[in-house]
Image (tube, rainbow, N blue to C red):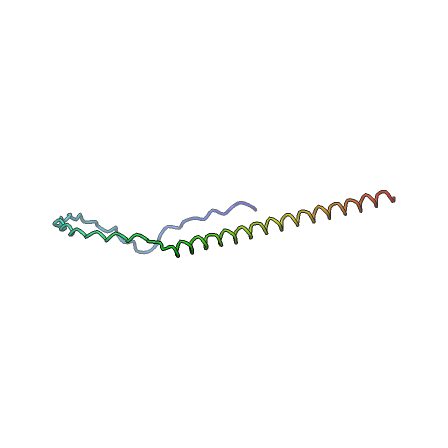
Length: 105
């Protein structure tokens, strides 16, 4: 009942084509390609010259980014601390309710 049925491969029928004859080919050597002309090197990039105003803007922008990221991280830490404290208070209240109920019986 639960024996697997093994498929059988029937013999091919119809006209069979004979295998194609492979002829040997000869390799043709092409003359070597001429070497390309040397490319002139690209001009060096000019050095960046920072003006005092640009330096002040970069420092101000960096400071703003650090302050914003710090404020976000501190607020996330504060949210976790507040959640932990509220869960601890809930646990204490539930524990006191359970012990008070057990003393009444």
